[in-house]
Length: 511
Image (cartoon, rainbow, N blue to C red; front, side, top):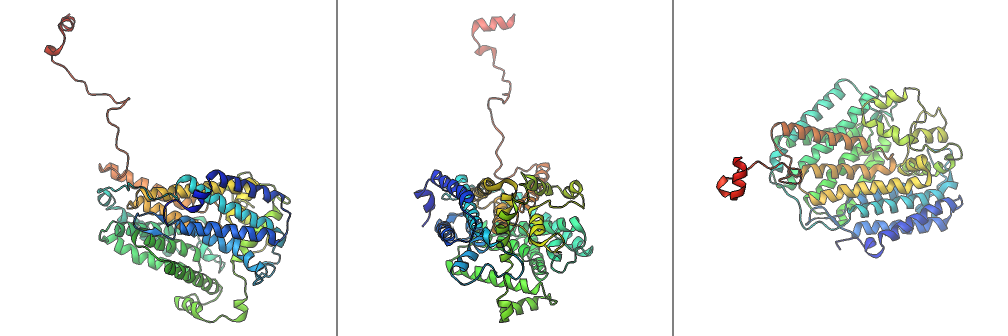
């Protein structure tokens, strides 16, 4: 099945908007609790949207149906955090009240958490549909023969930057929060965190350039051949150090690039990748809490039989699930809405170090993760429960924030996907598509500003490269050409021979 997905055909955008309004209204009027009459309709609605995303068969390249689209991967992780725990609970396979990490799980917030989840995935799909990200591949695909020549130096610049930042990070003994939180050892503060994020970004950008070359049926140049082992080294390093989220950002971009731009995959391969990812995810969760942080230790945890106490231990996903329930106990009863404060602080991180300078080192409750941790664990807990996409929207703008901000997120993702459909061989289009694919696959467990710095800094990287190419007199492939003789274009002056002028006019000219 291809073409426009079943939901837009059978249900207009207006109908989906009406559904979104009804769900938002229900968020305010349904009483607190953990009721099956709320859970099962939401679970059923999710499966309708998820199956629709699989059957839509988005095609970025006309000849390759994509099972790993932005929306499909977004919904997969979304399901694990916000839908599956309630499904297992009402099937009698697990109990929400049993949690290895939290003293209190806020079970009474389940109804609101489920309704908020429904609002989120409906709004995200609606945004993608409005942006045209689910439409069939355009009949005319943009290609430019100058693409290879223009980006010939791009891979080498990424290689130099990636190798340089890794050497600085390792040579200075830096330890970012992402890899140091589990051993409670960090070094370098905001500078270490920024460099660590840039390295992750450059790994995705470098991998995307390699995928673009293969998609264009061009041989890998020296920069690509050198980038691949560096990316593999860094990916293995951060995985062993316990940062599975950054590892999966790189892995999802690589796998998504392979199955989107190079070769088609199958349901079996996709299912195998998902199962393998869950095994690795669970193994890293155990390894990062142990003393043996090695690749052999990771492999051992992946394939060994778990002791009963480990098998019964709650997944860290359950923490995120509980944070959404806790949200409705905290705001606005105990704490007022942020009214955009958390978003402004989050987006300020685009400019390196400015956030710390503006807030100071003693600032508290500056993001939704700090709010949740303070209220759920107490001010001196020593660890953070993190945040999630829906809490981040609700704490700033209340019930209207979830549909509004998730709709905007869907619009953005749809625009990026549509751009990739129109230029599936473009290095730039492939890079931004894979950045969004990886970030939006994981964004459910983070805040809305999670992908902003990486996307903005990548945009600036390409702009800097464009400037360098312009200085060399090269025009970017796909860039609009300068207008010809238009309304505001001054035409060159043309002198007509006098013999071609009327007799009366020649006389006036002589005077």
